Image 1 (tube, helix red, strand yellow):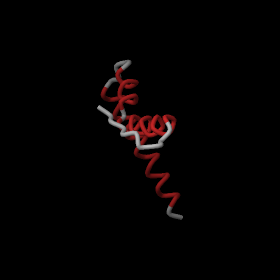
Image 2: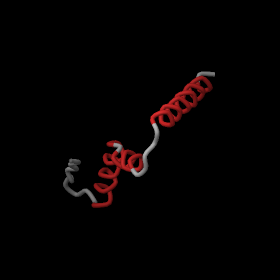
Image 3: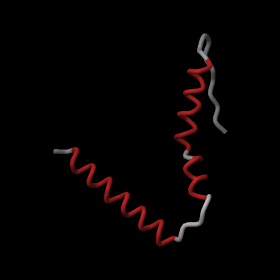
Image 4: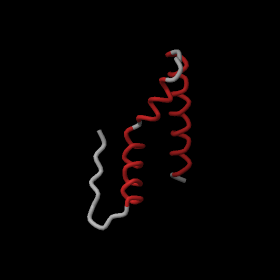
Length: 64
């Protein structure tokens, strides 16, 4: 459960923004979207490999 303490004189918009940020970090929506359809283990492993390669390439170009 996500708890957001609203501070004194804090606007509702600001508190809502903090709530949304915390909610996004938990990864609930990401997991929900992943569970909407079945993905074969081989496909998910392939996707993870491709993502790792992309991150490696991104990291390699940042250091130059």
